[in-house]
Structure formats: C-alpha cells, structure tokens
Length: 152
Image (cartoon, rainbow, N blue to C red; front, side, top):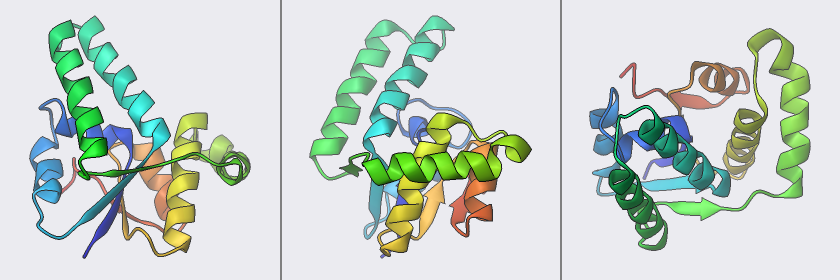
C-alpha cells in the first residue's frame, strides 16, 4: 500500500479544480493508499482558499463548502492529520540553515518538510506530494521521493 504525505500545494487541488487536479484525484481514488498531512496543512488550505476568494477564483460559499469538506475528510479517514511537534521546529530550523540561502526554502515549507522527513524515517510515508518547486527540490535533496501533480 503506498503511503503519501501531501503538502498543501498539492492537496488544494482536491478542493478546487486546477492544473494537477486529475493526478491528485487519481491518488485519492486508489483502493489501497494512506494519506497523511500535518495540522499545518489545514491552515495552509484555508489560506489558499481565502486567496482564491480574494482573487475571484471562487466564491465565499465555495470556500466554506471546501472548508467543510476538508474537515469531513480529516474525520472520515480520507487522510490522517498529524500534529506539529517540538522536534519538527528544530528540524525546520536545520532545513532552513541547510537550504534557505541556496534554494529559498521558507518557514512553512521547512515545517512541512520536517514532518515528512520524520514520517519517512519511521517508514510511515513513501512519497511527498507537492506542487511547490522549492519544497519538492529540497525534499529530493533530503532523500525523499516526490510526486509533483503538475509533472505527472
């Protein structure tokens, strides 16, 4: 059974049709799969959806509907939500020290990546799904297998 860690850049495609949506939907339609996200992803999804409202891509009602669907998916087992821990903060700092200057790795992406690295070290995920090029590049540099729904 494949195990995926979804960054918000990829997961948002499940809640609003855009480039890469069919690839993300295909993963969620797999009979045997596990998807894990961090608690931070929920906040980032709400932010991404709010941006879509502000830019006129969706209505407030569509954002609210998507928000309810996100909560439902978290409770119905569509994905498992893991907490951010102190060790993720320390790891994120180290990631920024290693990759911040050269790649431009930013704080929230470093936190997401630190969760993915920790889950991978415990053999809980096989792939990181990310549509953000910087996050994907650093994830690869850290030895993770990355699926970018924009390039499949």
